Length: 180
Image (cartoon, rainbow, N blue to C red; front, side):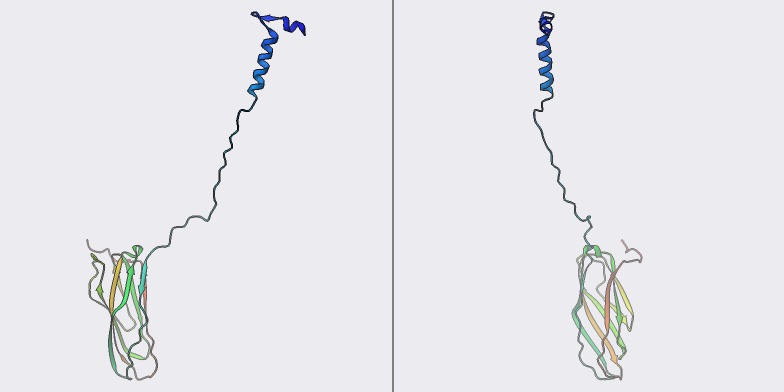
């Protein structure tokens, strides 16, 4: 062992060179610092787009005045139907389907548009439904459309409480495009 420490390389003892190499190797294997990165993420339900906003139709129930059997009647209700059209309802078709009670011999409904959003091309006139018919109106802009409702008809000879319905639906418009 003494011989190893007495040998030299370019005048430097081999023992010192070996000691320096060993210490360098030990220091190279030493960890100077450690960093831990933590990644967190919440797993949730898949994203779904919000439901479309077509708007709403406000059409409260109507109680007409009593009528004698076989008599005609007519009643106009101002602002009876209010359509608040949402952004997804623009350009769609408002369909009104009338189903009169069998106690009537004649039953007509006219929805007259009296107010509409500014810039709308929908005509301010009456849209009539005769008997058990239907009518559709293409609503072109979002906003509020107000209709007066005129109900006219003739009661039959059978007595009882008549109950008629008008169903409002907003549907996809499949007709020709509006004029420019």
